[in-house]
Amino acid sequence: MTILIGNQKGGAGKSTVTLLLANYLTQAKRRTVTIIDFDYQQSIAQKYERAKLLENTEPYTVVAASLDHFPGMKEILSSDPAQIILVDLPGKLDDDGLIAIFEAADLVICPFAYDEFSFESTILFSVVLHKINSRVPIVYIPNRVKANVKYETQRDVDEQLAKLGTVTSPLPDRIDFQRVSTFATPPAILPAVLNAFDTIYKQYLYE
Image 1 (tube, rainbow, N blue to C red):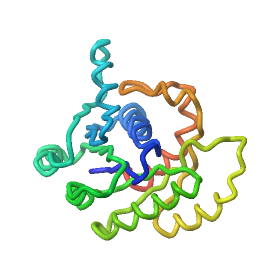
Image 2: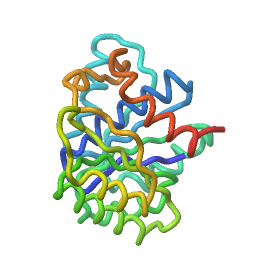
Image 3: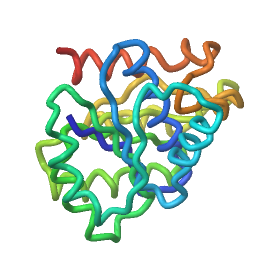
Image 4: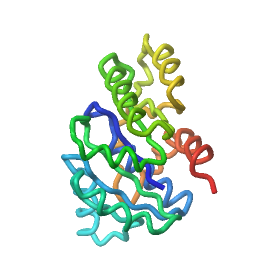
């Protein structure tokens, strides 16, 4: 299964959500996972290399690549039907290399924030995605939601996105999310992410 984590807007938290999901799938569900890091900053690949220097045992593999590598990689990586491939996308839509990746997607996870610019970027990303792959389900994860802030647009945004896919419970804006690595999610974070990931797993990944 190929799962894309993407949004047109940079800074939506794609890489952090990718790491959190990979840790959840390997540690809580004992699934086989490979991450392909297509993001231009390649922050996941950098964390992975640092973890190896510390001689940590990696629960999954991280591959740093550019978009034009995907067609050649897909057939090799998808040879194991039990494997889940998580693809961390770059925050852009103007690259023809995305077409093959969108076409190959079995599920798309789209983190977003409750602000006008993020919403517009999320809608544009969804429209372009569905023009290329009309069958793929989209899961929207409200991300970096501040507990003490009342978002005037929250209900309207959730209603609009629910017409395009599934909207999960939100992930909070907490400083300890920066401590997520390629081999562990801090235990204090787990209660904040389990509801969203359990929803995704039960609806799309349960075997």
